[in-house]
Length: 211
Image (tube, rainbow, N blue to C red):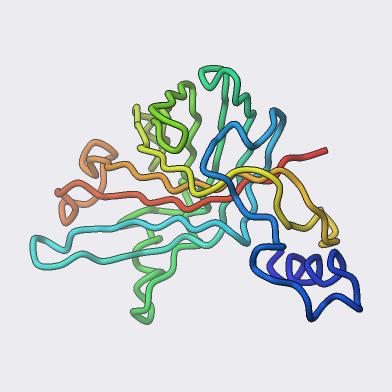
């Protein structure tokens, strides 16, 4: 998708005008969620990151990233309460800079990706506090347990922008980009006794409207 976006800029400007592209000539996200029209949006994994910030027994905070994410958003800017979102993260896609540690964390003693291969969030409530901020309520499933979770959401940008279609061809579509955060109680999900302090989940996601 990143390469497609760069190609799209060149094609949009035209070969002769490629050197004349300026920051002001490239469509960018607007600070108003109404700028993205209603419809079905699909999460763009090339522009999405899911990270967890895990306290290390009161000494530091470890950051882990999950590389395989999918999701779909039913978007209605005129009535945010009607919005619906489903997203999944593959537990085995966890990464860490410590060699071999990801395999331990996704193994049977911790996240047990063989038994519970995905974490899932199904949103059933959207509340807009302003044009750029709000909350998303729903159910978070992790380690086979489903509990309520609320994400605080900040709009990064909405509106027309460069992306790629399913074949990677450059196109302009309605996009929505957000940053979302929540905290979970690891013991409520049955995690190891090593994890007792709240764990922060951070999501930076971009959704593209489907035709």
